[in-house]
Image 1 (cartoon, rainbow, N blue to C red):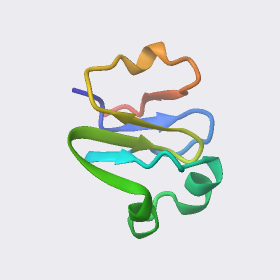
Image 2 (image 1 turned 180 degrees about the horizontal axis):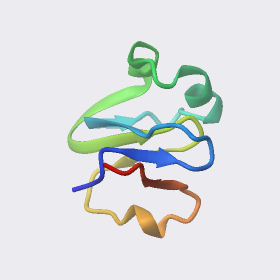
Image 3 (image 1 turned 120 degrees about the vertical axis):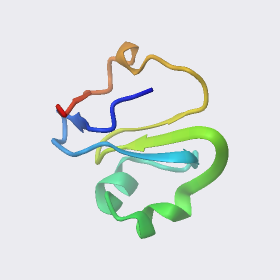
Image 4 (image 1 turned 180 degrees about the vertical axis):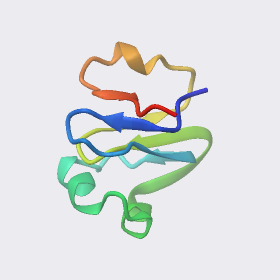
Length: 83
């Protein structure tokens, strides 16, 4: 389980999550900076993968397909946005 209200302290943007998707390897900073949070613009770089989850804000992104502790990834600045 993960918080569904994550917020990035680096770009001050809400972290979006997409179940059963991963990000294409060609994704880069400018892609997310220019296209978040518009799903129609993000879809071309989303790959369907059952059981995976794609996360992104305007400055960081991750594809997760196994149990992972995101707190250990120090470059991520994602915190609970409070419920």
